[in-house]
Image (cartoon, rainbow, N blue to C red; front, top):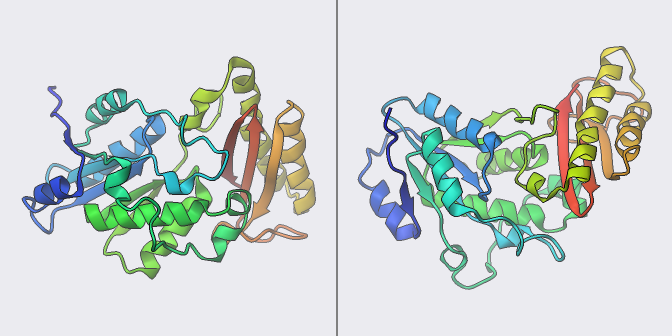
Amino acid sequence: MTQSPLNIFRTVLEWRTFRSTLPPDQFMAFVPTMGALHEGHGSLVKLAGEIAGRGGHVCASIFVNPTQFGPGEDFTRYPRPLAADVELLTKWGAQSLFAPEGEEMYPHNEPAVTVDPGPMADILEGAIRPGHFRGVCTVVAKLLHIIAPTHLLLGQKDFQQQLILCRMVMDFNFPLEVITVPTVREPDGLAMSSRNRYLNADDRAKATAIYDGLQRAAAQIHSGQRDAAVVCRTIRETIAGTGLSVDYALACHPETLQPHEPLIQGPCLLLAAARAGSTRLIDNVMA
């Protein structure tokens, strides 16, 4: 089957001019990304196409958003393989790509008005990366305003991020539905991430301990263990045993991210963040 070419838009005006030619009630599925695409992104784009059907439209965006990177983080070295990403999006069935330059999204450099991500942004990733979720919410709010989708697809690997974005969509009355998609993994269990390409062979092998630790802890819970400290220690020791540096390991409620202490009661989400060399990786599993 011949693949349709991908429509690429580099400015807001270009996209809005095109958007105005589409039926106003047409299904518009949107997958925001920072590029360096992998099969995790592919699962979002493919699902968007399945839901949209023949009459819908699937749009992805690629924008490496500077406002969500903190001092000393990897903004300048973040991979930007646009040509390869275009090939993948075309293969996965996306019809449009919005890929603006920095000055298009932030014509006055740092935005004067930003989105407050709320108290959930002060814990876990937010505590380690101050300002990160303010940058994420601001750019996604801008993209939703520009693209005007009917559906937004988000991956669950960045669990805290998708919770915050779901709350933003609800609180700001964006007229769309959010669809969250399970984490896609490599054959050895490592969660797919654009940052995996930073890993050398040794760190890549060690990184599988993150998912291993989460699985071991989940197995403890399934076997009746309810002591949160014991469960979290299993995650930490499994990861640290390979030489990785653990940022956090937590058993928490999946809707609030509040920790289960001292006992696990009710639904439980296990979260972990660790550093393999200079690369920071996150993962989670439901237990």
